[in-house]
Image (cartoon, rainbow, N blue to C red; front, side, top):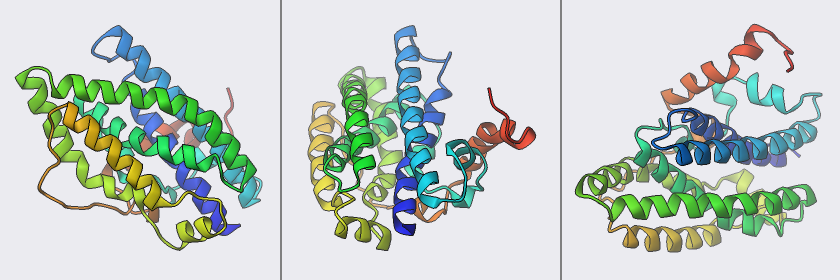
Length: 249
């Protein structure tokens, strides 16, 4: 059960932190339609996080709920990818970060639908419908910006150069991942990576963008080793629960 708790926590934390990041765009989008789109995607991710963290709390069996897991842990206890905690930057940076994540989450949820864990299978089936739209949205913007003006091409290429180093962690594998794969609960990361590569290669080709030569690979989020950016997210996210423990709307 310890491995299952850790595994569900990872998936939930990815949605939670990226949902929080996207929420920062609310009221600041480049156009009204995109302001609404990013806010809705944020809500989808936070909805996923709520369901996953409720399940994680049940597995842990310590009387906690999703809110307590979301708002009352220290930074080292979060298991999200480094990619999702990176700052929004400009609109292109946000779309590139979202695209890398969506291109991973779609084949991940497609495979997770066949999990032997019925709760995860049901969550994956529901989340996949949302994720297909998320990928369509982010990939279209990457193509539009990459194959657009000289400035938009340059800036989205800079976003690609900055964020690509975090993508290898999408396929992080350790004893938890291997145990879940052996139990038929988790998808095999090699299969998910194959589909991710196909999507990324196609979209970047359409966008006339190039994967950077620099092959640095940053990881640590799955082990609770985060960038300084997570601390600022948690300071905003946790303030009310820290100031008023047990607060409910």
